[in-house]
Length: 386
Image (tube, rainbow, N blue to C red):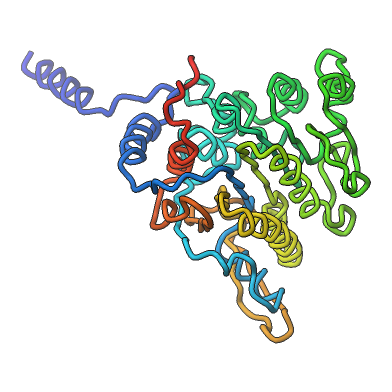
């Protein structure tokens, strides 16, 4: 009898000390981390200088080494060296290593989420994006990328999907429900052969969009709304796509700034990340230099305008990239990699223009959203309902 009592007591003691399992639908790090971040977001410093326009540039996979490689290869200073307000950003999602979807969701909505989510929270509720807030406040908006326009990073600024996989047509259809003035990147097929057989290209033209597949042919023409889809699916490397990204950035700024309205423009240098995944230094370098020329377009406009905030950052670093040799004189980079995936290292953020001092120090990626929302004076607008 005593033996049975001892066994039962031992069993009860053991089971009562066990850590309860977290439901699969709720990642272990999510709830407390999100609450802590939200509390911090609303207490960190934000400038009272409010920009009329925001140009937000994301170098996908761009860490400090990628920037350094571009600087060595260019042999003259990068445009980023003109920025004086610089900080560091923590990139983790509900996992230590984020993917582009969760990373972009954090910056676009202010919420940490699971990898693969397109502006959805951990319970798969829609999260309202900075672009959607801007639209409600009558800001003009635009998205430019060297990926498909339905790829994870650009999609997180207008779309809401529980997964980033096999949802290109759904995201293309979702874009058509928005009032975004400018969309440029790859993915013609997802619009021409849309969901349920819809021809979204024709629908876009009916809605007043000027639609093209060649940015160079647009020339000086300035439409009120424009969609430029340069490839059927993923755009090619720079050897084939040429000067597309700087030209697209310049044209987008031209369209959005012409009516003298407030505007928000997100520009992504997507293929820096692809070079990291492929462990190819030359790929990273060519994309960094292309991104630098694009940043130049944004910086030149902001410098002349005086009312534009330019932000440059990354969603994460890719490849565990390091420079182990080369020549500054010859612009030669010898790189090594620790991974063919993303890493948890912090990424830099550079800011120029009204409100730039808000982005110094070390911050969570979610803080970018809250600070932009305040600086854009759209902080009082209601969040999305579940």
